[in-house]
Amino acid sequence: MIYSLDKVNEMAEGDQDFVLSVVSVFLEEVPTDLADLESAIAEKNYEQVYKLSHKIKPNVDLLGMEQTRATALELETLGKNEGNMSEIEAKFPLLKKDVEQVVSELQKDFDL
Image 1 (cartoon, one colour):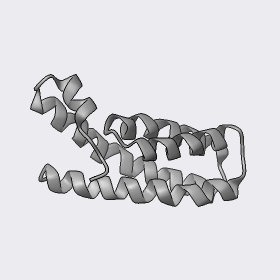
Image 2: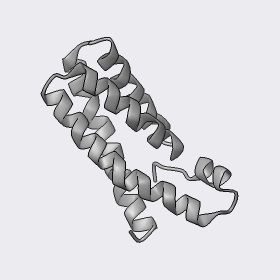
Image 3: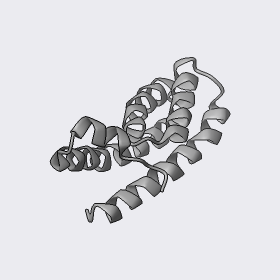
Image 4: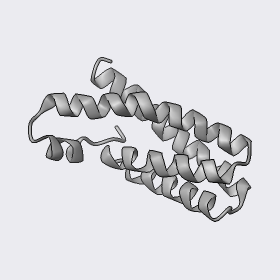
């Protein structure tokens, strides 16, 4: 398991509906943002790479995905600075693999 609900549970203060809401939002938004990010990379659109990485970062952070957050931050910085696109292309698969794994785990763990 590469995610942790510690931060979410702390914020929820025992409210399981809140936890479920956070998980549901993650499952709705992050895969779409990830697909859009992949398209932005294919189109070499640095501004979109920056914006989408920036949007994904707090979602993975909330689920305690530290390594994934670090990768999103790297992509965000490279996009903002119009850095090396080949570096962006090399880092993206790490982000994609982690997000897809967590989406699968969350769907199984929460029976969604």
